[in-house]
Image 1 (tube, rainbow, N blue to C red):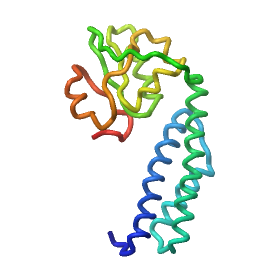
Image 2 (tube, rainbow, N blue to C red):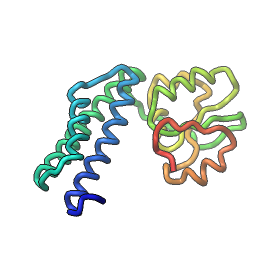
Image 3 (cartoon, rainbow, N blue to C red):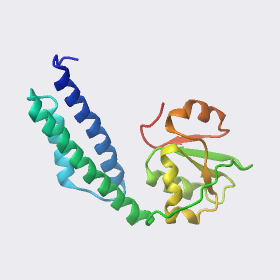
Length: 178
């Protein structure tokens, strides 16, 4: 709130939110050994720019540039995910809980999903996705796990109710927690 001009403040905040998303995309891609130095340098430069006094036109340009790099970051993450787990396929996903004990996983980190499936195989524990992790059901590499049984719940913002009703541990892999 130290920036008095609401337009400048809004553009700065929009840039910061965009950089948070871009940083999350690139972090997940980095875990799968995909990197883009140009994106990393932009994130650093843009963070510095949010601390500087800038004109409205300069801030609009920064917001647009953040969006441009955001698209590049999503492409980097898609490349990382498809190289590691295959191209997503149309898949029918069960929404019915089974009788076995289960673990619910939410967020965006497919590497965490992979590690959970590996660590829990042959344990008699079923794995369910929630909300943001739903797309994991579409990757061919995860379909080899018979204990990966479907999705539990609905949208991320219904976590409070749905997490309380889930009878087992919940693994959050990113910051999408209410």
